[in-house]
Length: 500
Image 1 (tube, rainbow, N blue to C red):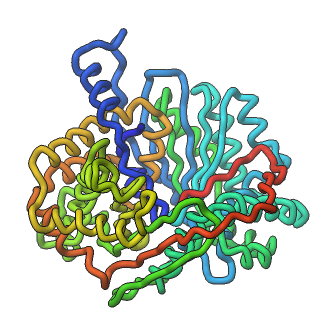
Image 2 (image 1 turned 60 degrees about the vertical axis):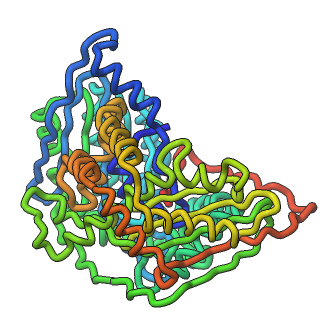
Image 3 (image 1 turned 180 degrees about the horizontal axis):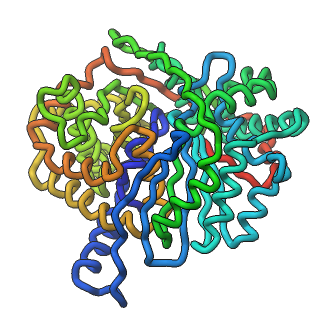
């Protein structure tokens, strides 16, 4: 179990929805322990966040936390799958792989070896909105990883043959994570049906035909275009001194030449005006159905102290917050509404059922209802039961007890998330990607706690009609008895991550 964090809310969760974490018992216990002084010894509180910009446009964010002699260093680049163009889907993720393949002074594969030799660990990830690289190391080794990361950000290079080998690893990653998973294939195709103009319609890992056709030049062009200082941020959290980090940032990142960030064209999704339906057949043991509804997102401008009701997006942002609360009421804790109504008791129609709502992102957002039919039940029965629960909220509202329960969880999460340096750094980087202030986490929690039952009832009545829905159904087919399980292809040290 893990607390609801701003970085989790901002990661695009289209069609592969993580549940809003059911962390209440653990979080509340931790919060009570901290509040009652049960901890063995007092821990120094983390210091305030400091943010500054180098002359070349690169942002640096520092959060000192001296509770342990470790540090997390992250490089965030505001470019992801949504910045690709048709024909080169997957290039952002392919570049993430190639960033481990060398510079004039670091051989292919040596980056991770050097981090490990420092006593640290490293990895990277690609999402629709961004690409991130991270290392967790002893605090005294911060300078070494800053030197390494700045070097590959500015001087990534590799021979064509290295790319030809690595793109096969990327293809195998697609086969293992997507093509061998019926639900992953369903999610991918549902996104392609739900979105017309938005680049969120393309998979992060890329279409296989695009990976087959990708060239070293495609990746190098993407790197030169987007990996510029003004499009990146360095986040450091842990046992560090702000002045020290500033000095090291100036030394290793400050000398990278400034270049303009490419202009981004608006690719606005046209309003949906009718039900969209997808039926997907694949070898599977159980059916599955997912209902995706287009919903508003929280606009960064509406999270500032100056934001008010006069903002043109204020009402939509408020609805986005209320939808997040609705998802928590439906599926935010053990024994929430969907579990009680669909999974437990004599009226059981589903083996599992869930709800999630994405709040933040560079592109359009979705509210997801999904479920797996119980034995003897149909996907239509699950669909009807899921929509019935939303209709009940629209008709009768929610209780104060339900609202207080999810709000208490979010309040406790603000304390609990401090246990992880990585979570702190990731939240700060995610805030920057979305154009949010460094303290956006506490601001979002405060606004979520202010949502009323009437607002939750109103959004339940507003956003769940057929015209806003894309329904995807997995129709199980017989397994091929002669099919052999796929074995992962041999790969290097780097285990690149794709965030769906």
